[in-house]
Amino acid sequence: MIERAIAMLNEQQRGVKERSAPWMVAEQLKDICRREPESADLLAKDLENPQMGIVQAEKKIKAFADGHKAGGFSCVTPLEAEGILREFYGLGAASASAGGDAPKVLSLADFL
Image 1 (cartoon, one colour):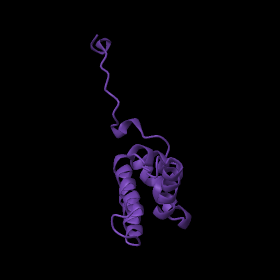
Image 2 (tube, one colour; image 1 turned 180 degrees about the vertical axis):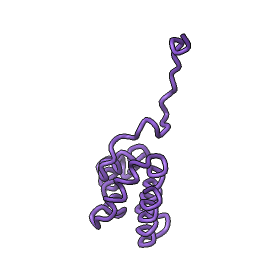
Image 3 (tube, rainbow, N blue to C red; image 1 turned 45 degrees about the vertical axis):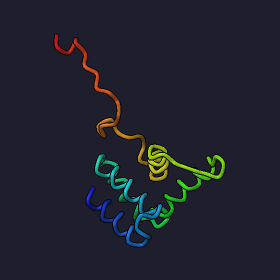
Image 4 (cartoon, one colour; image 1 turned 60 degrees about the horizontal axis):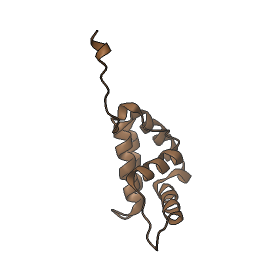
């Protein structure tokens, strides 16, 4: 399913300018697909709907950025963008198996 989702994202990227905001949305979604196969399945189903494309997803990120302007400047961190994309596509929170920044905890009791 990962390959299908990435192929669909590549197809949508061909319809926008390289390195544009929607193009970058597709790149971030590909990263999510590679880390989380279960998200790739959901994403592929959503991408079949024309109202759920990368252009529409980018509009959600832009709306967030516009709502958080500071002195005529707006910015969205990668983590914020991922959260917006997860909400838009219904992907839920990042899975623990995605390898996030959470430290691994080793209990000495595990050795007993």
